[in-house]
Image (cartoon, rainbow, N blue to C red; front, side):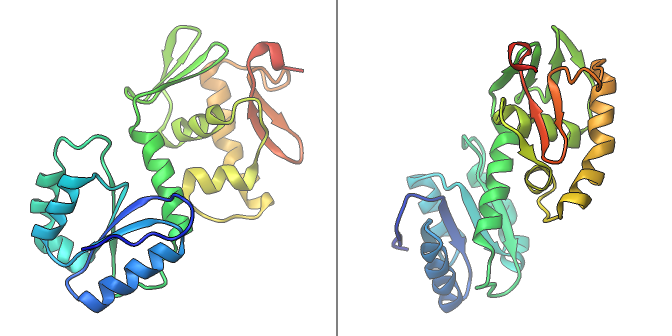
Length: 219
């Protein structure tokens, strides 16, 4: 159950796999990707490691998770922040660690309690609420995530493809990403009562992407 670390600080990853050889391969794979990885072959070992340090991500064999999920989630009750639990099939030594790290960042965004403020726009992560000029505005979960990603990079242009990757977790070329985002951006502006011609707060930078900018930065 020793930890393996390689290079710069990364995610704290707990790997749970009933087959020791497969678990150790995953352990080495995580370390090569720059994460701090720990391995446990069973529920007792996993609970002991969680008690010592709450992981950022738990990677567990799907069949094991189906048998032991109740015990694992009982052990996680009260943990703050909660780790992201990622079920895998079989060995999965080719696990896409970079994609998993993006999923964890999105998960942290979704579960954190901070309030992101961009001019008159506030995004309350704990209440999952968008507030515009002091009044709550109903948006869909996807639209909430779009605004959250933009708010975290307020004042910067977020390329279409980057925004789709952060929100949907998929790769898309610029044209596909623009089409996917277009309807959601239009609906967000409508709900906030924004004029797209003025580019108020939610700014479209033609040919590049979108940006949230407080009024004093609008051009």
